[in-house]
Length: 406
Image (cartoon, rainbow, N blue to C red):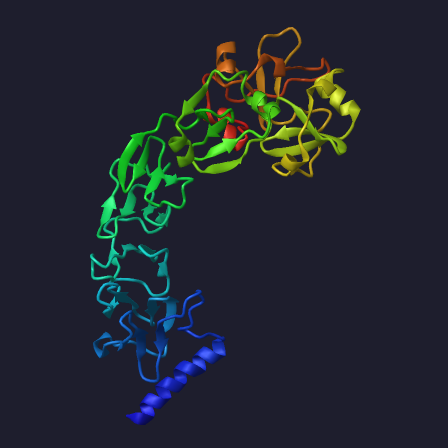
């Protein structure tokens, strides 16, 4: 019996040494209370006493390894040590149905493996994670410390039990900018506090928003984040004026976390930086260099230079410069063009051009006639593909570069 135990202990430490691991060495700032002894797994409880894992758990010491400071596993099961911070008493338990290969701890409340999502509360399951019924493990993710979601539902951990936030839109549900208070979260319709609706948001996805008393304007994206216009030039490449701006409260503005900087709208301006003479056409959030003045004149006319705007160096990093250059015989994607003597306006894509069914449809997609290029007589109109007969999110999503539509 004693020889078998020695062999088992030796096997544990030999395997650990070969792999360069210490299964029960926690990498966090605090000392790990969970550790491997000579004959068992032990946990130092808050009351100062050390507890051994019960024999009826049948832990396989050879395959045992650390998951987190209170979680460990062997080849067939996942285990957790739960604590009662009031009494200082702790206990070992098995996470039922957990897969030891894929199980991971997302935070203090939520865990997942390839099959299930789990919720952990001392009051629910005595500190041992319990399976969240009907949660989708593939899409399950944490939003902040207290909220999690999958593709169809949102969950709130209110310490004592798990709450399904029935009114929440899972697709747009996100953390707020007030990261220090995880009881708050937001979706496209509401601001939430402790899993309940606190107030209906005034702004909708796609809105221009500003806070009472401040002049800064943001674009509210479909992801619930607010996107920044780095300067007036960028703003006016997308909008003609400020009539669509919605003024909201400080609390609502702060509920939308910052996204990224908005770039110049494709097809409206040519861009450069003050420290480099190269001129570029904007394609989505990318840039294509216009190789020379001849190309610029051929595409944009003799007054091509009036389309050029300077992008501050600090914001130029928001763009990616493509290896491909603009051709003198083809307009870049996103360009707005029309043939001489015709009122028809076309939107250029890589596979052809899309005709706007009417001027009202053109304006419904927030385009401006001043940005339309009168084609050179030497150009042949590319083949027509599916036309544009209404406003399209793919053409008007300010946060995503709005290139190409359907």
